[in-house]
Image (cartoon, rainbow, N blue to C red; front, side, top):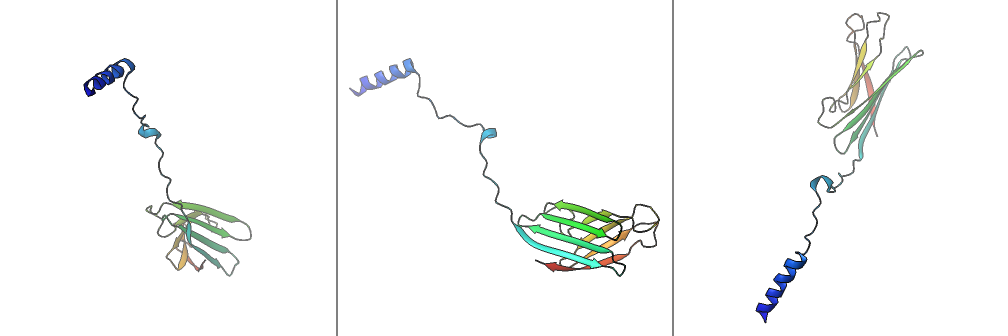
Length: 146
């Protein structure tokens, strides 16, 4: 009896075709697991106002994945200069929350710029302009951690 059942099964398989195999999803269409959520970690806000009333600000936002968002600003009675930067955790500039801001601070009109840098407790803004007597001037800002 078993012999006839096997023969019958073989005949039916040949006549009707083999049962369909499970359909495989191509790798390019497979769903990837979403990355873990990124949360805001430490935040610092750094400020300094000169005796002439010029204001310097540097804000730093560090995220759980190591990335950094930073903004820098200089304002006086006439103008306001702002820049923002975003870094992955392993990029140059992330460790110091670097932020460069073009703002010619004297009458030399030679494209002076400021480099903002954070060391974990204070922030500095260094003026860079070879043609200026202010070249190398450093402003140190007090920072508050939130």
